[in-house]
Image 1 (cartoon, rainbow, N blue to C red):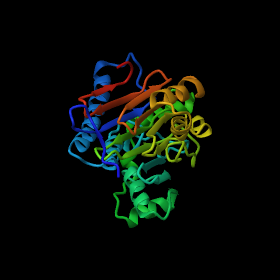
Image 2 (image 1 turned 30 degrees about the vertical axis):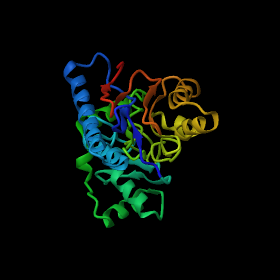
Image 3 (image 1 turned 180 degrees about the vertical axis):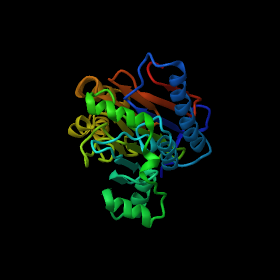
Image 4 (image 1 turned 135 degrees about the vertical axis):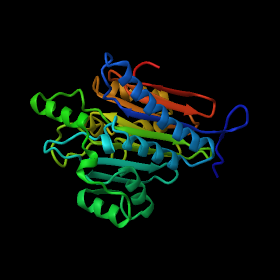
Length: 309
């Protein structure tokens, strides 16, 4: 039985990391705008830290952190989701439990306020792993999860971004995702990821976030991983499970495995990854210009950043 890890002072060890996407605001943004993001990341990290410090589960921590980020219009998930080519918000998400590799995921849902909670419901039900579109929305309705109409997801910032994208398509806004990974005091790992996908994407396009082993993965024997970046790239290279496999088969540390995958195997400027290993080490790497991120643990670490720490 896994009774958790101990810090040097004898306290039960826990750790958490989060990201708000590798598609960051420009460095020359106003100080007020930068502070908005820092405050939101700080609030999200505080939610996760408090759950874990009070003995809560890693699953509860990652779900609640991602729910907060889905509700925050600053990030490309839930209420802040980008528009697809038809001017519609389509949402993807996944959650995974490192104890038994159980997982739940949704793709291309429109009206679910918090897709990550629908993922957990699917995971705990156990019949399926990945559900999509209208079927997933019907499942949410039957589960009495909160549904919203299109107006809830319509933010002026994302709408204006979509209008610009229609005129001049770019890759600058294509890395928006939110995610969290955690180890609780019992030593259990969990991962959660949620996104609105690519700006101006084709209707029905699904990225790496809901694909277990690509954008989301957790296994108590190795690590919990959540990715953000170019979804097609992360799918082709099965990034999340590749990191875990390099730890398992090559006996690499999480830091070494993640650094190798992010810096050597992914295309330049394609995104980033956060992870927590079975010893409670929180690691974050990216090869993009920046990554909204944060990490906290039972040793007192509490950091948030967009660019350098």
